[in-house]
Image (cartoon, rainbow, N blue to C red):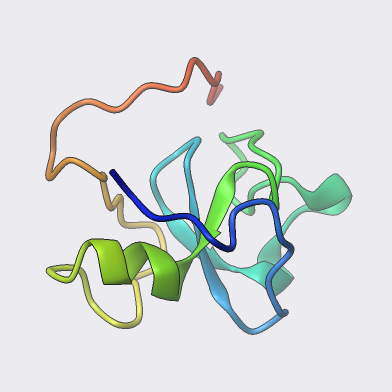
Length: 88
């Protein structure tokens, strides 16, 4: 099970966060109006459905220290992951 000490906390502006809604990472400063995920096809809220990237990466050490924007980083190494969040 993934540790989540920072879950629910708003990260600093330069910090990468991992979005549970679309499985991609983005910098906190890139969040859309209202604190939505920076990706236009995802409506997950930052702070509620994000995890600071350093924390996520610690639990998934095979992922890079700095993520690639737009790339999916599934928590189960490619297995499906569903939170019941609409991403369209």
